[in-house]
Image (tube, rainbow, N blue to C red; front, top):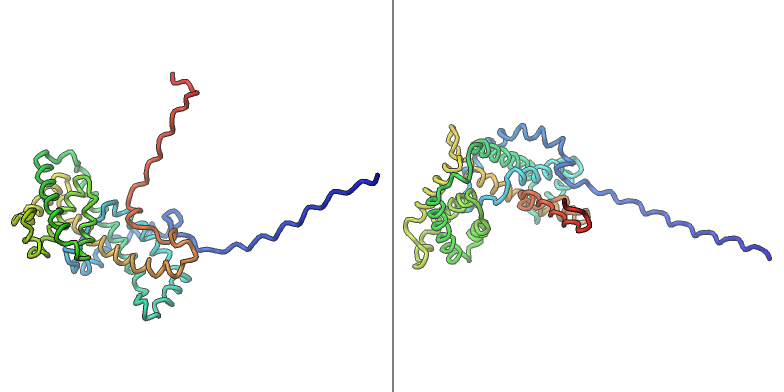
Length: 295
């Protein structure tokens, strides 16, 4: 009987050509460009001083996270966006009047990120010997009482004001003594701006709460070692101002960038700064293996 030859395998389809995507501006990918940039952080902070000083204090909502982590994430985006091909795409978008986007926002983003990094660096130097354990029980109690009362008053009476709501939402998740100091600072500024409206609250309004909040803010910073340096700079307030500029500028670049790169993994290209500011979660401990001896 004649032997039937084996059937030839069908030819493999030709692989599709890989679509080249721009590298996401991860910190690791941009480690080399970022390091020299950080050498100019102090210079960027001082150049941004007029802008920082002009921000309405009522708009300030300190970041509840590590400002340097957020700064590095934003700096990665700014460094990537200044590549010739990427900047050219942003520049083309800026010619569309409807977008109202200025390509100079990319340069401002880099400056704001460097300023944030510098401010956080100086705050850490100032608090090198500070410890949350130094907060007395009395200061803990007084500051929490004022903070909670002011928060309730602002939340109830300013819920129809968009800018105020942004500050209130930033205050809401606070934890820890440094966060409480930031909360008191932000709430005192809200009280100063909206005093007439808040004063109608018969339940939570106190005439002297704004003054108390500012005094308690200073007390907490002193207890934590975060007193202004010899040049008189309050690095916590400076951080709130620098974060405001960074957040607003990043939002401008991100909004246009996500449109321009909507087919090229925009979530990787434009990380969330608040999420980036948080320390990575520690991996959960592996469950014990019942088959292995414990002794």
